[in-house]
Image 1 (cartoon, rainbow, N blue to C red):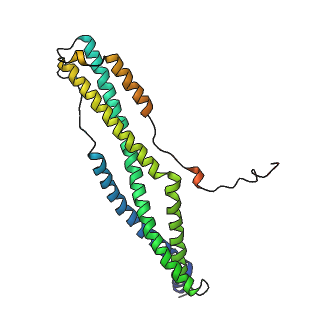
Image 2 (image 1 turned 90 degrees about the vertical axis):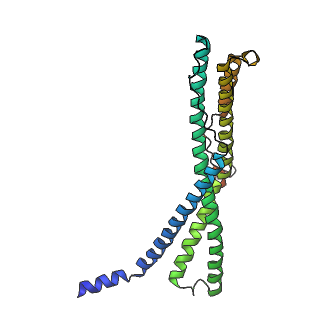
Image 3 (image 1 turned 90 degrees about the horizontal axis):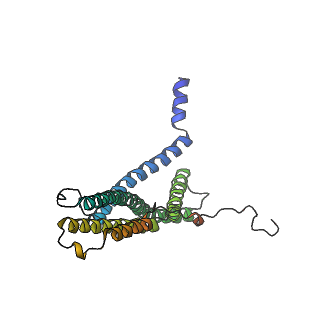
Length: 235
């Protein structure tokens, strides 16, 4: 009998109900994040699909080229494939950052509106007269709202999205330039009008050097950090 009473008391403990409220809010948040993120990924796919080309470059059809031209074509193919890997890297970063930005911005709008309503209710009743469980809901929502307001600033989503999208487009343009040059080189009819291979290849390497970038930046200055007295005179 005592054991049954202790179990009943445990399940009716106020702290357990407060924990259940927090866990319930987090579960709803998780479901919302999953739904919003999936929608964002679909939008990102549509944005990049309009720029993506499925060009393929190989040694097929190069039988009539000289040994020197075949070596040059192989160099172009290797660079062509390398640029594709770099393009896909920046595309992946863009998709990830876009999904986070879309999700966090949408949630921030919803949470800010909800926090405003809860704050008005608490202000009307007074914090001392507000029911404990309602306080738990209010403080949990307020904490999550604050977090989602800070995260986009720290991770600088907008800058990272713009950087990686621009890199993605630049790499795609380089692949098109290589494909066009290799196609004309295999045809051989307009070789006299083509830029020399050494100039073309050197130009590509120079552009690659300028484009190679991780594409992820953080804004640590957006968070206030203590200077531990370093700004005081005589420190």
